[in-house]
Amino acid sequence: MNFADVLVGSLVFTIASGSSLDLTARMGRSLIEQRQDKEQMERMDLELLAAERALRQVALEAPFSDDVCADPTGTLHTALSSASSGPPLPPGLERRVELAGERQVRLILRGGGEALDRQRIYTPAAYGLCPAQAQGPTAPGGLP
Amino acid sequence: MRPAPRFRPRAGHPITAGSTGFVLPLATLAGMVMVMGSLSLLGTALAGRQAQVAEERRRQGDDALTSAAQLVVDRLQTSHACLAPYPSSQWQPLPASCLQQGPIELAAVLQPGEGEAAARLVEWQPGTASARLRLQLATAVVPGQSPGTNRSGSFELELEPQTSRVLQLQRVGS
Image (tube, rainbow over all chains, first blue to last red; front, side):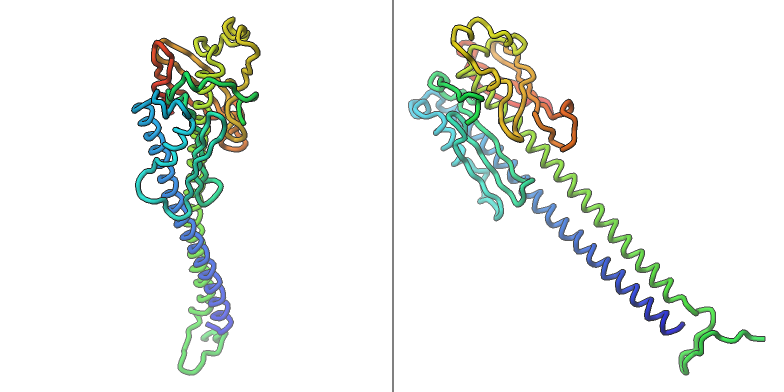
């Protein structure tokens, strides 16, 4: 064994182990991100299920009550705003309810990245909320 | 006659000629094994990540289809109610009941949603106490996918027989 062999061998080993550590660290980061994203995805699904349940509850309880018929879209907005799957939202997850048009309410769930965003549109007519009162003109093209 | 050693051993560290030069191949091999192992693990993790993104896109497609179904039902219950008793195959030319009502924007029902959530109505099949709605996404969930293979979804509506009020709207199938 000569000194050059040992020197070059150690250099190769050091570089290889450094690269290996770096790759392993990247893998670890990727796995952590995957787990966080998966948790957010599951929580978003729960939020959407809770929203659906809340709207069906409103439709079952009083689809023709004066309050509902006075403002079916507002009723939908209120029901969606108060619907929750239970524990507070984890950090990084944002939940927003907004009026998307004359008879549309949009529920937006925003996660860490763009790929994680979810949004759904809800309309009073799809839940049978006061259909006679919901008559009205539609914007040309259908959407606001 | 003994061959002369290529390298002169140091005092106190006698090294035979057979062990000469084994450190470099060994270090290279060990390094390669480590790097290849790490690369393989990273590849697995990235493949998992890709699968997760695909699943997320699939759920976003479901959201777009559900939203489009809500919009179609809204229009068929309100501004385009005259179309609701007829299957979508009879919407062109417009049924007589719609002609009496004045000009009607068919695109509002046939192409609900906008942007990435834009969809296309494939079929509306009304019945006495139920109706079936089939929609297809206008854009591919997976970029590069041909339009013919876009995601589609079927919805079942439960209707009140006398008033046609929607009692329930739910997705059927996958």
